[in-house]
Image 1: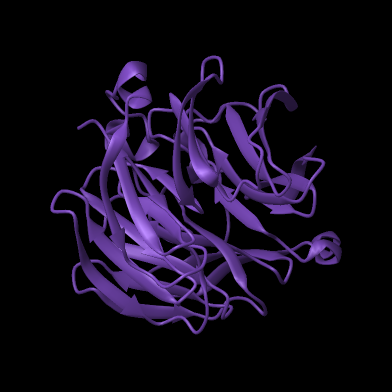
Image 2: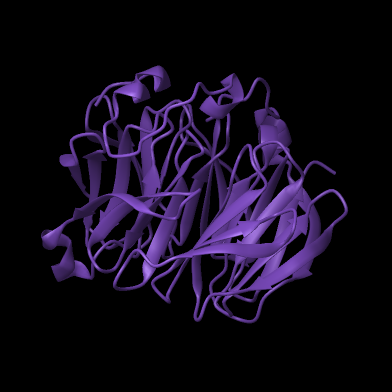
Length: 330
């Protein structure tokens, strides 16, 4: 797997695929970011109780002061990070929300739930606009394709699917029978180029070529894969293990280049939009820089989800106590 330019995405072929030119910011390369000392010196800015008890996922907008969270209570919450207040609590899922994502260029959020559905929300009207019944079991993860036109979801039913956000229709479906013996897919994420997809199943992280629908690489994580994240330059994949290993993989060499023992199950991992920093939720919240993978800081508040804001200006950490905590430069 080599670095693939997003312009090549026009070669993707599935029925109804639409390709539009993307603005530079859609590539995820931030023009500037906080420095290493600034990120290392993050302090607690705010904490708000948004959900009932249970695992909470979180996503930060690429450019706006907006965070979305999803909880075990089935609620999707929108939070204004500038005003430090909840904007809306939207109920739709019948069961836990496993993942929520904010669209980088439209007033849209998508969520994946234990009720086997992917839901689409308007962040302006703050209402549900679509329910997509794509899977036969819990949807464990969902991403928004870099074109902005599609949602890519993975499920415990052992399938990953691409759905049109406008019509709600499924345009691509891939079933992985081998994953069913491990409970299907536990997590997934689309590569920044939009050409490959990463999935976690059992103790393996699999990389799929979306155009050919083929599994082009597999990594033995040696423990159940609980989360994964691609760096914004597309070179690295971070995987989190249920037994406490945060592993870094070089996609150019297809090998493990570094392993961090965080001492607790890794619930979430996320690179910032510049690719300079990596955060991990493993009970507490840990921060690392990506040149040497050295530890920068650790915050003691319990966390089950983490996400960086624009230019690493803040870090949103959601906890199993239902609270959203913001860290940043005071």
